[in-house]
Structures are given as structure tokens and as C-alpha cells.
Length: 604
Image (cartoon, rainbow, N blue to C red):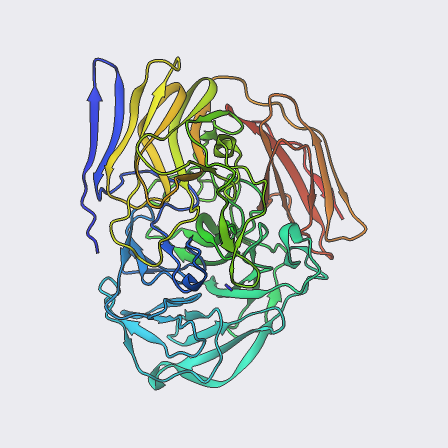
């Protein structure tokens, strides 16, 4: 775990004499996009409950997302309100009439008939609150505090109207469940029942630490229940929210309170590689077309170990009942729910990353004498270790936890990227970051205003994106171009953004190059280690390869787990279940697209 009304004002200006399309946004414009890109582009809240440290940072974690009367409501830890959307693209923040004064913590939400019920008091002692109008937020309480110390709750309403509570965030205790009585203020019916617990000695992905590298006892947390074809899927997060391997697994049962059986294909939501990693403590919701989506927590963990963002992934159930969450290319652009696709499981647009490792320059860099202040292990402000660089190369290294920092924040600041050759661009993502910020809570009027220019020769520049009058707060500004554009050079010009220092963790460019696809991986091998939780994966790549994606699963036709790596031809996978056989496959990618997949290898 651990209102404004958006008005459509998308202005597109055509300079016919130049053959140029400029995407401009003014006011609080509704985006008419067909795609999205993780982390999702919302106005993440500046956390206030740690303000005594003096360290300011944004966070969004533990998303509980429900579909209520055709709208999606997203409840997020310590956000002092919640978000609503009709399309999973445009999210409007709601400041409710009544809410938790200190913000909700790892909130639970469910639809019960014509109302929404929520549990999220950060004290761990709470009553169930409810409303029929979440768009207003007139939440009502019955004052009946549940006689349970609750952490990371989940609420589930079954087809028969019965209500259940699941909860736990601990590296000691099992996850518990209990039925609640709606007729008696949602008080428990009987005692809580222990349901599941972690077994890191058997389940490699449940091990603690970055890349499952620690022997510390892992955390079991973040439950969520989904019922599909009379089977109950109890999802849970592990091993720790601050790590790249934060994931969700699943147990199944024919009864909402068990007994539960471990799903051998777990983890189901796992993203240890790429620009933004992690995919744990999530929620699974159906869209208005009946397709499933999984929202999840993704760490940054720089200003504080609980500095996090939210990711969105296609999800569903295979024939036979296997649950999946597709995180392959999970931080590249994907099609939104309202776009018809041949296969919901595969919503990747095919737009490749064009900016990785390219030449990036900036006209300002913060001097070494200015260091970042963050929250240390003792919950007090400390200075990050010396030697950390904030130069322009951090704009293109595909790491959300590193960033370029300018010496100030004004309209003279510029950064540029040379793609190396002419390429076709479909979308951009500018990821801002907090460096010695001083904002706490929901501050009105925050906005990200900038202009992005492009050039074919590096001399003659035209405006590609004009957000100079944008009034949105967009710390992960994703911009889908109305029409693809051929170009080579891109330049970000700052206008007005929050905080004293302009910091950008990544200036990402998506589209396609005009070169050849990479070759199929050769000499693909998988060797299981003596510790059966681990396997060594290796393959051969050429100079034409930017990165690779490894797939694995317990059935040959259901390789539903994936990890993306850049510039590697080997990987130690530490997420296997000891008593399970697996199948593996790998593919290469570059700016021009994706290679043919390798042959499939099996291991006992």
C-alpha cells in the first residue's frame, strides 16, 4: 500500500502553405485521443501528510477503480478526492463535499445497487461510507466503526447482493476476509477469516527487494476481488510497493471466502522493466463494452520510497479461466477502450520509441552545488548522495527515476533531441518531475505550458505542439498528434510549469522509423538455476536491435508475462514458481518495429 467542468476546446490550426499541422490546447480542453500512454496522464496530487519533512512530491497509488452508471471513478491514496472519466482518457478531479480530512489511504470502492460504498480511513478504524452521487461527493456515514484494524481494504458486492471485505498490508499476517451486513451498518457477520499468505520460498516473484534481491520478509497487501464465470479471483499485491517487481498475483475459489487455490500462472500483473516499472496493488474493472482493464501502482521512489504513479493495462480471462494482464510494451501508446480492436488483449498501437539513447542537449543544467533533498529512511529530509547527474542525457535514458534539471524555471529554457534520421512521429510524452519542490496538497491553478517545435534539418523550426495556453496540470503530458509528422529534430520550449526548478524525467517520442525491422533473435536459451525460482535467459542480438521483450507462461499458447530490456542479450528471471514448468519466447525491437519471435523453449 503501504470541479471543474472540462469544455471541449481543442484547436487545430492548419498552415496550408507549410503543409503543417499544429496541435494546440487552450483552457481545460477535452482530449479527443484514441490512445493513452503509461503512466496515465492525470493531475497527481502533491502529498501533504509528510509535509513536516519539508519534502514535496506527487504521488498516486493503490487505485480502486469502479464503473458506476457508465462512468469510471478512480480512488487513489492520499489524493484528497478522486477522479472520474467517461473514456479513461480525460480524468476530472472531484473535490467531494464530504471526505477524509487526511485523504484516503489504500481505499476500497464498490458498486452496491444504486450507490457507491467506500472504505479508506487512514487510521485503519473506519465505517463504510456511501453516496448515490459520487460526482458531487456527498458521502454519508453511519458512524458504525468496524471492530477490525483494517489495512488496504477491498470491498466486493456479489451477484446475490452480499458484501465482503478483504484486507491486509503486512509482512507477517495473512490476508483476511469477512462478510459484512448492509442491513446493520456493514458490520461484520462473524469473525474475519485468514484466506491466503505469501510463500516466497515457492513463488519467486513474491521475494522482497529490487529484482527480488532481498531476504527480508515480503509484504502481502492490496487485495481486489473479481468474479468471472462463477469463479472468484482474489488478486493481491507483493512484494513491496517501492520496487520494480511490485506485482499482483491471484488465487481462485468457487466461494468468496474460500478455500482459495494459488493460480500457478501468477503473477498476473508484472512489469519489471521499461521506462516505468511495477504493476502491483491494482484493481480490475470492466469498461462499457464488457472488456476488462487492470489499474496498478508503479514506483518512482526518488523523493520518497512511496512516490508512485498509476498504470493501465488490458486484462481479461482466457478460455479455461486463466486471468491475464498484458504489460508487454506497457509504457508505449495503447488504444483506449472506445477504439475497436481485433483483440482486446493486444491494444499496443505498434508505435515504437524513437528517442531512446539519442543525442539530447539543453541550454541549462542545475549546478552541482544544488542537490536534491528527499525523505530518508528515518522520515526526515536528507540530501541525496553526491555525484548524481542531472544532464540532458537523462531525457532519453528510459528511466523515470532519473531526470534533467534546469537551473531555474522560466521561458528561456530549451531542450532538443536529434532522432538521427527522418522518422514518422505519432505521439509525444513529456514527463515532468519534482526537484526540491515546495507544494503540498491540492493547489489550484497548476499548469504545464510549453511549445514543442520540430525540424528536418535542425535549422528551420516549425511549431508541432502549442500548449502555451494550456491550463491543465499534466505532470505526464501525453500528446497524440492529429496526423503523423515526418521530422528529425524536436525541441521543447518551456513557458510555465510548477516549482522553482524545471525537471523532466523523459522526453519520449513515438512513431516509426523508415529503416529495416530487426532480425529474429538467435541462439535463444533458457537455463533454470538450482534455485528453481530463477532462470537465466540469453539470446543473440545485432546492431540493429534497440531492445528485446521476453515472454513466458505455463502454457505454450498463453505466454502472458513479459519483461522489456534495452541493450541486453541476457536476463536473470527471478519470478518463477518452483513446482511449475514454463514456456519462453523472445523478440527484438527497434525504431522500425518488432522482429519475428524466436522459437519457443520449454523448461521443466
